[in-house]
Image (tube, rainbow, N blue to C red):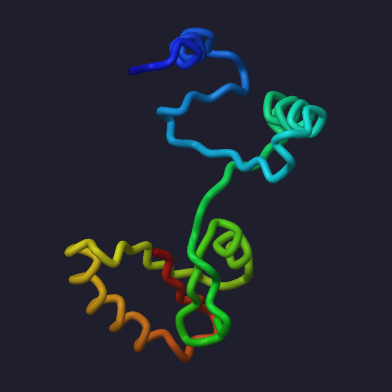
Length: 124
């Protein structure tokens, strides 16, 4: 059953408004019982000043090995733009194709692990 406001939101196509079926989430970390905080957050959202929320795994405590482990887009943005080539394996541990590709990925890691010009990373 679709709620009435969801139908309205789809038809309005209001700038800055996104519907739930786009599977985009925004995190409100304030006090839901504080009317002013909530109104302020809604105003920021409507003006496009609220960052999308992406849930990811916790970053590894030590991440200085041959292969960097990336857990979110911020990690990826931190390595892009450096004066190095970047090889990133975007994988899904449950995916059969990713599992088969891992053998080839290991060959790339071995071949380029000593290079000062290449960053090797992986992201689940």
